[in-house]
Image (cartoon, rainbow over all chains, first blue to last red; front, top):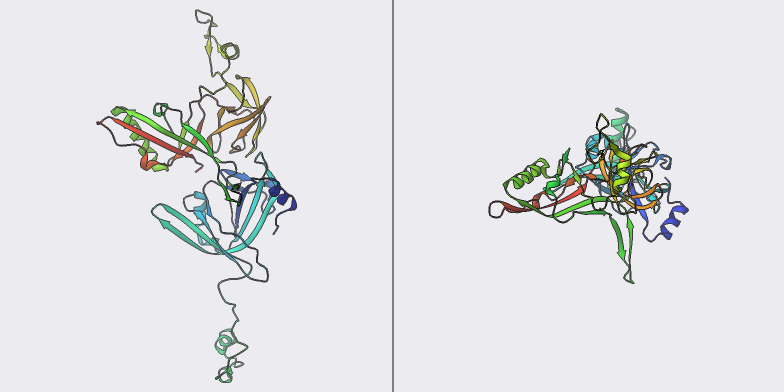
Amino acid sequence: MTSLLPSQVQLMVEARAPRRGLLMYIQGDNFARRFWGGVGYLRLDSLDDLDPSGLYTGSGILRELPPLRQITGGKAERIDISVSDCVPDVMHLINDSIIGATLYVGYVFFNDDWQIVGPAAWLWEGYIDVVRREQSADSRARVLSAVSGAATRGKAGRRYWSNAGHQSRHPGDKFFDRVQLMTVNTTRKFG
Amino acid sequence: MLVWPIALMPSTAPLWRLDHVSAGNISLDGSSTYAVTSGGGAWRCEMPGITLMGATAIKAARALAVMMDGGATLIEVPSCECAFAPVPSDAVAAADSSVPFSDDATFSDGSMFMTGGIDVGLSADADLRATTIEVDLTTVGDLTGGEAFEINHAGVGKRRYEIGQVDGTTLTIRPPLREDTPAGTALNFDRPACVMRLVNSAELISMVHAGRLADMTAVFEEAFA
């Protein structure tokens, strides 16, 4: 995961009205979808270290993106990205294969002639684990909820070393058989 | 694809605007900072004050309105650029494009058939999102900047561009090219069109006065799918 290059920061500092485009790249097991926040299509070629062959689709797809934070110390961050549900490219995302796909969010910067300056800066990486639809009379959206880091909604498979858990893994083994008796009126520290 | 008819143009020229999306804040000193995130903008065309006189015109407008299906069906919206197009002088146009009858006969005053008028094409391949293009100025008047033209792309169809700067045969244009475009592709200055979507279908045609007079206001946005 790259971050802003010094040259890109310099560009933003020098320009009173920096021109930037938001990139969103979704990589699944056997598919990749590319969207950006501008009008028309965008091709990054070698400036895209994730996928140099891709063509990013724009025009009305990205609706809302929350502020991104880079949290250290093992904490995870969850973001919701809202995309239009009226665009053919988004309709491909309806199937369940997007669950577990990797989501990258980044920026690309343009010079005064709308030509790309420097490589794409990928700022956030997470995993899509929830997709929900928001629909009203005049609005149809699909919200991709993604979480950064290795956090998931489920607990670890061996979080509790209880007899019941042990029996499910090793039927008949009595190693944890009397744990229940040991923990009467106490708080277990190990499971 | 549907084409917006010239007969339904408003009495005043339609407003073509390149919409940018910007975001920023007002600072303590009152000035604003902003960042443009739309990547060059999209065309928006507003046609207020289209007068529909008579049942025939009203029916034509109604028919077109239902065929656009509330914006679901895209439409080519042309622009009358007669006043701004780089039309060559008659002498230049006649020298470049005059064609006689098949037996080499001319009209009684010596003139011949004339085609097109403006003949400009790309002299080199242009990439997607290019804003500088090289052109062959075969037959054209003076280019000064501010002219609108159309390129009929193979994938995204007809798209409107406007010239910002002219440096010989190098043109600086906006918005960025919508598609890779090969050398030889024509630039249409006569009646440039753009593929768009109707965005005000609910308010398109006003109530009909006296049974045969109505107003129409059409607003379009550039569309890709």
